[in-house]
Image (cartoon, rainbow over all chains, first blue to last red; front, side):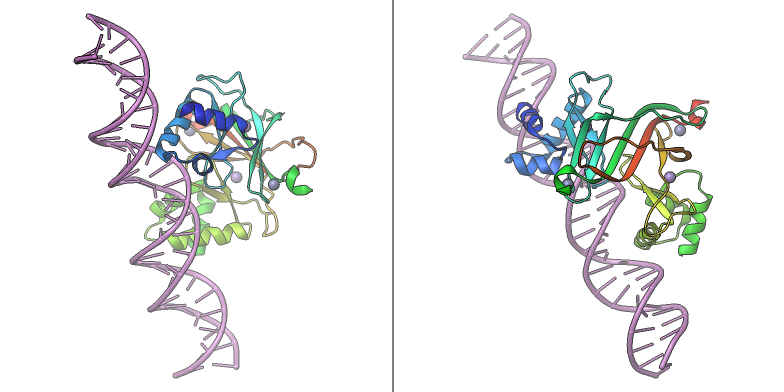
Length: 120
Length: 120
DNA sequence: AGTAACTTTGCAATACAATTGCAGGGCATT
DNA sequence: AATGCCCTGCAATTGTATTGCAAAGTTACT
Ligand SMILES: [Mn+2]
Ligand SMILES: [Mn+2]
Ligand SMILES: [Zn+2]
Ligand SMILES: [Zn+2]
């Protein structure tokens, strides 16, 4: 099943939620899917995106991610027209200056607006 | 009740979830609280922060926010040690270049790490 | 092949945040 | 007093995330 899920994820152009996968790949148990994704996340195969839609979405990681660290510091774009979330792997998240004594370990930048497909 | 909630929010140094408010301000009905916050959000009094902790958190808006637009384009910091979320009103979110035909309307930057109180 | 150890899967149940429906209460205006 | 509008509280529902447990599958060893 992990192979099936990985295969499915590699074909996606958008980030997908557990429910998306459940509906597209049935028959398949939601809990097993949940655990599969969890395993993938822990091993640096997929990254989680919280776009504020209520459900986490997931996308395949860059090749250089591993279990110790994720390197996909790219922007995610949430289209409020089609409600889809896209990875923008070429758009890096800039560094920001923090107040004294704050230590940054990760950063996540969500841009919301209208995607290329919906502006047409 | 709106006055009570607004008063409470103004005293906070951290963003708070509905559950936080429910526990700190009882007795008070969760649904009414939910609708109060929703009203505040729609009228530009509070902004919502999705820090990935599972529950939305809220904080008072800057004075120049209104029902048409939020202007708090500041970074939010989630401390993975104390699990608290802080507004960093002086740390602005930089603009980013998007691919062709993407239109940005909002942006949210969450930095995760260790907060000033926890690095001591 | 047979067995033990370990991993993966599926079902049932639970936890918890978010949301809706509905009815009662307060308050102002006529 | 009657009407209308808004605010509140309770019950119930939705939807996602998560856990417990036992069965099924896999691998390693003899
Ligand atoms: Mn991504
Ligand atoms: Mn803020
Ligand atoms: Zn779109
Ligand atoms: Zn902290």
